[in-house]
Length: 106
Image (cartoon, rainbow, N blue to C red; front, side):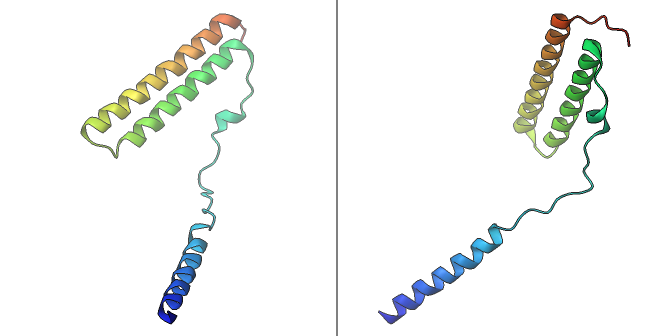
């Protein structure tokens, strides 16, 4: 009986100490900063469209970079999904431009 209690106490101590390792906060990567394009003034529908297109291209490139670690079928599916997301983002940008008009003076 004493060994069962001792064993249970060991399990509790191990579980408690491992919880502390999991609960620590992740370090902040200070080398990654916000892109400057996030701070540019957005003037008119054409400028908003250009900004959305630039964001879509940046997201597409990031997605393709994320796909590089995959192989074969997973790689093809990842690239297809990235392209589908890019096309969806660009369709949204075109719809926004058509609704608001694109003849602002830049």
